[in-house]
Length: 337
Image (cartoon, rainbow, N blue to C red; front, top):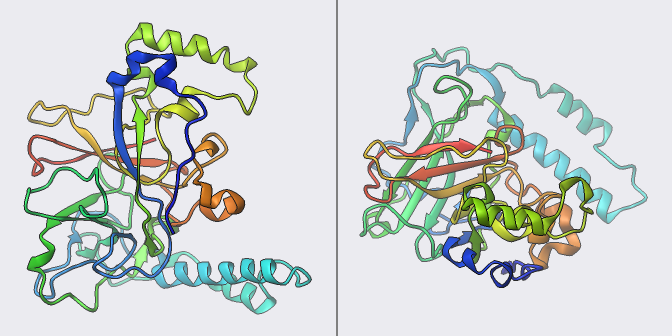
C-alpha cells in the first residue's frame, strides 16, 4: 500500500516567498511491519550480504554480556501483539495477556545472559536499514556505481564519551552479490529492547521540507514567529511552522534535521565541508505535535502507525545521520533530537 502525506494545511511559500530558497526534497520511508526480502528496501530486514564477506562487528570496549536476549525481546513483542489482536477481534475477551502469557513475560528479565563475552570481544552488529536507490529518490552519497546502502548499529549505546549508538554504513553494488549469506548473524544480548528493529517493508514517498526555523535568517524567522502568535495563546489545532510546515517526522532520507531538543550545532566534516542529513531514524512515525503528517491511509488506525519499527532512540527521539557530500568515505556524524 502506498502512503500519502496530506497536503500542508497552509502554503507556507505563499505567505513567505523567501522560504523557496530554504526548501529541500525528502523521502519519507513509512516503514510498516512486513516480511521484506534481501532485494527489498527495508528496516530490520535481511541484508543483501555476500556469503563470502565478513559480517560487520563491534570491537569498541564496553560491557556486552549484560542486557536482554534478542530472542526475549522478540518473544515479548509477539505476546503483546497477540494480546492486542485478541482485544481488537474479540471485545468480550479480557484485555491483555493471558495468565500463561503473563508468566512468560515475567520470566523475561535483564541479566548477564552472555557471560562468555569479554568487554572487547567482537559482537555482530544489528541490521537496521537497507535502502536501494531505485526505491528512495533522495538517497545521495556513496560511490556513483553503488545502488544500495546498508546501515548497521551496535546493540549497545555505550560508545564515545556518553551513551551513544555507533552506526556502520556499507555501500555496495547489488549486481556484485551472487550468493547471499543465508544465516545472517546477530547479537545474543542487546543493551535495550529499543535497539532491536522489527522487520518492516517501506513505502517511500517524496515530500518537500523547509529549513528548521532557528537556522533561517533572523528577519524571516521573526516574521514567521509573529504569524504563529505567542506560544501560550495558541490552540492545539492551530497551524504551526515547526509542527506542520517545515520538517516531516518519522524515518526519512534527505531533507532537513530538526533541532528541537538542542540548539543547532554546526555539522562540519573534518575536511571543512558542511555535512548533510542522510538518514533520520525515528522512534515514532508521528506524535501529537506532528499529527498533520499522518498519511491519509493511516488516519483511521493512527495507533498502528505510531511506532511501527519498535525502535526507540534516546528518550523516544530521532537520530539524524550526517554525511559529507564531498567524499562519502569521510566519517559520518550523529545527532539525537
